[in-house]
Image 1 (cartoon, helix red, strand yellow):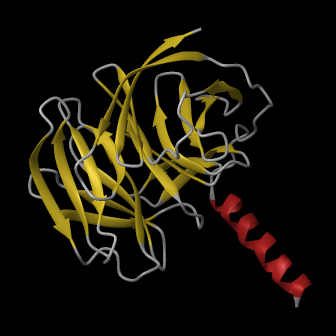
Image 2: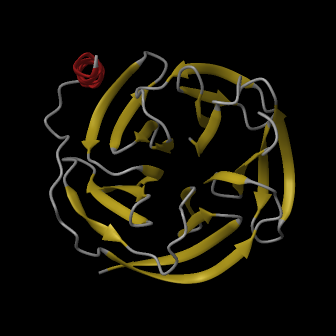
Length: 251
């Protein structure tokens, strides 16, 4: 039975890779060079009870606050300068059971995207003006936790060391990075993929075109990273009930 279970596990992962496009860029190397110096500009407490994800729409932040006693969660539009809640939406029917959870949020310039788990992992598109769920699509990975990010009309998704580009409308995905770390935060710039690493409590950086590991970013604090985003040319990192604001200078 143990051999059968192992075989089924191998087949499941193999089918995941087969379902993705056959790119040659999902490999990494052992480069541990520190690519950026980071200066902590501020560390701010959050008034919400259980913030689990954060993103920016350039003007303000969106924060996901999960109810610790139920499957409800709230999307909060938050002004980081005034500490003001601008608007919020509560959802009680997306997380269907105790095994469901919401892991990440992204903004594509028009809409919000959520990465959630349950019987199946899903990507959910939400209208930020009225909170309406526009549609739901199955995510490309069987693994959780997962992070989501939007860059130049491309949706990026990470789960346990795997990073994909995603087309949820046509149900297609392309595997870009394959590694062994557990990823809890994701962002993409013009050249690089930034993935938070639960082991080092820092960030691993991969080349956007090749998937090769380029180096890392280390933080002074070793708290678990729940999410991160770029806001007004600053790196915002969400940890337990804190928003840490960093200035990053490339070495």
